Image (tube, rainbow, N blue to C red; front, side, top):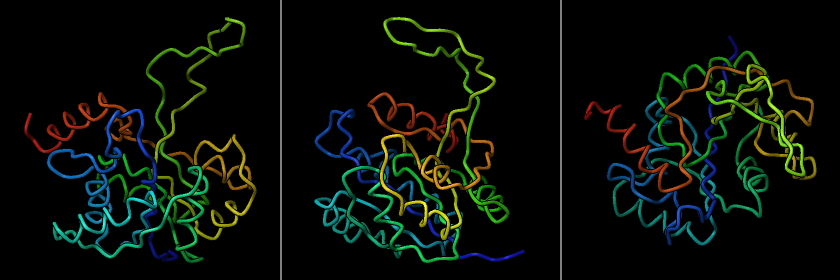
Length: 230
């Protein structure tokens, strides 16, 4: 089987206004550690030699450097300033990823990954152009038609998408060379627009994205369960 260098591009450039906190959500504590640190530790547990590229708000790069120095958290990582949108932030990060690698693009505020899950994703990506974790919806869905109208849809035809999404770096770097469009809601949508074939794999229910204070509380509950404290 062909071998690839592994990269993790962690997108942590948001300001987290829905968290109602002066400190961006990626730096808030989860179980005594910043959310971003827990996310990075998941990838390091999977592969201690993985190459880390972390995209941060430009005005928070020194804050993160100071935290890492103060706490002795010193994995080798490249810190990259974010852009105007998530698309531009990912594009900035991909500039630090070489051709011919596998790159997992991940939300920095999804800190509840398992090493087994990451191994499954990278293993699948070695045989595909792009691998995206997804889960079937558990609630009924309706399509909004406008003017107050809506209609029921068959939820078996839909999935909800997670990160990390893993790509051949050569392909995804080329995809991000195309102009930005508002329809680009994740990396898979950028890849698909460039003709890259998307392969789905099973996501994980615990792989939540922390966006609101309620999400942070839920993540703490999940973390406690995973650590055997419940």
